[in-house]
Amino acid sequence: MPIPNLIHPVPIKIQKINRAGTLMDEDAREPIQFAKREATLIVPGQVKWVGQFKLEETRGGVVEGSSGYVLFRQVDLDAANGGVGIELEQNDRFTRIGTRDTDVYVIELTPTGHYPDQGGHTMLKAWFGDRGAQKKGGF
Image 1 (tube, one colour):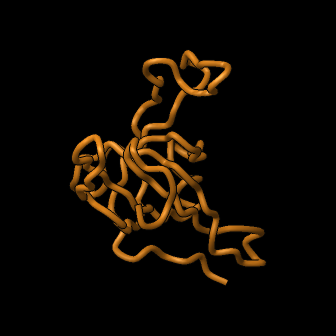
Image 2 (cartoon, rainbow, N blue to C red):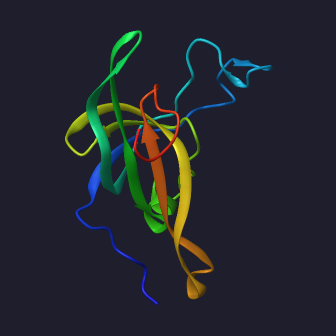
């Protein structure tokens, strides 16, 4: 069975979190101040915006938010970084999606496109959101 293709892929700029170089709060298991990031990598992905720069009214005022997902082919992730590959994880950052500068973070990963001859998933859906995002779907 062939490996699935993306529909209208665009370049995605990814900055992986460098957990070893980041000062972490042991109790909260989160970065203190700023997380250290690795060099920016570019991987093609298929984007689905659920909410792009939408405004939401809250008690504290109006909050702007963005959410959605990027669908990656696993072969593209494996070939990234000069053939070393890239393994996405929560809190990795997308700094540019296509032609739009962004500041969104991976909040959930969903392996998909499982084929028996490939031995597992062939695609990875990386749900993203800005820092106000709590869950995937209709934020």
